[in-house]
Image (cartoon, rainbow, N blue to C red; front, side):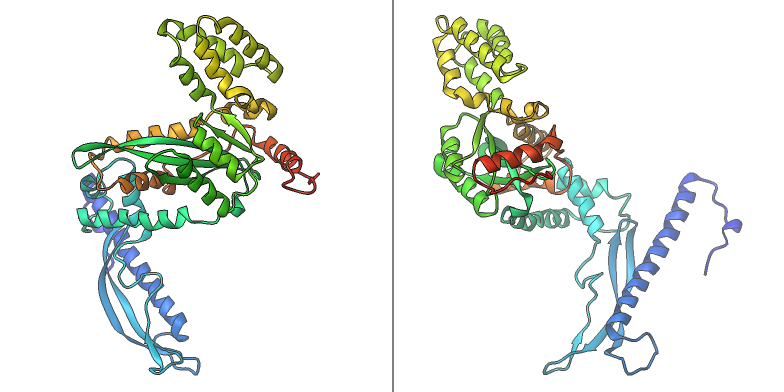
Length: 415
């Protein structure tokens, strides 16, 4: 019976809150039952107590079950039914697609659990954090773990997905080490990461996260060949560090590609060849090169750097020359894009976010769990990749470069 609100005494804030929540849960329960009953009516081709030639089955009672939504736990009556179909038995038991037989929570609830876990709340605390939202619903540690484990299925599908529709024009490739505590011992796990930029709109896309034992040519070749096989067939620029194995693998998969050596990695490398007292001046002279207003000015600063340091720090000059023209490739792209394509910092920031996240975890059960957690930050939208700076300029320049490299036969003047 509907309660008369005007006759009720609700003096306290908690009582008012409880009344509203109770009424909301009751309405939600009714809505769920109505939706599922409508679904069954559509399958049977006829409503309750109706008769007609269009009947495709009949109802067969109800089944009570617990179902948790974002408004809390509900006990709902799910209708049962049998519908006719061709075959030896001639009929089949009906199951709701909206509320599947073994589902105990809505996708929204499971998403909330997943995001809480990925944001840094460990499995033991997730159920406490969500208790006010899911009042009355059991959410054990094992349940949380099972929900999180489903992320693995998404990861396996993601790492094998077709990339041809992404139309990747620019690649960022770098390896980093995840430090994870496994069983009381800190393990260093090498992860090879690939990020791409779409030619159509400058949007950045995470393409690959692969655990490998090293950053060898064979390891990187497996990554680049996989990308090429899955549809990354016409990239025109790759930003990488000074890893010779990575350089070789990239050139094997895409022989025409332009290489941009990461300017941040190169500066760190220069430091290793100089006394600490020279760091500040080396940095200033180096920045005069990579932050120059034009390629011509950068080459002038490059020559000045070599003249200044070739006697006092010859190994620094030798290290700079090792990168050569590949350090200045970004100057041949629109100036609005220089900041983002001259380094692999986008991947470094990914590693920083992961380190921040695992501090709350304590330990992880397997090495795969580390990469899975990293992937989850993207899958749940916790890490968002914005479009590259200068993205409006990317379509025409990519068109021209692909034409010059023979990747397309004609230029689209409209682009």
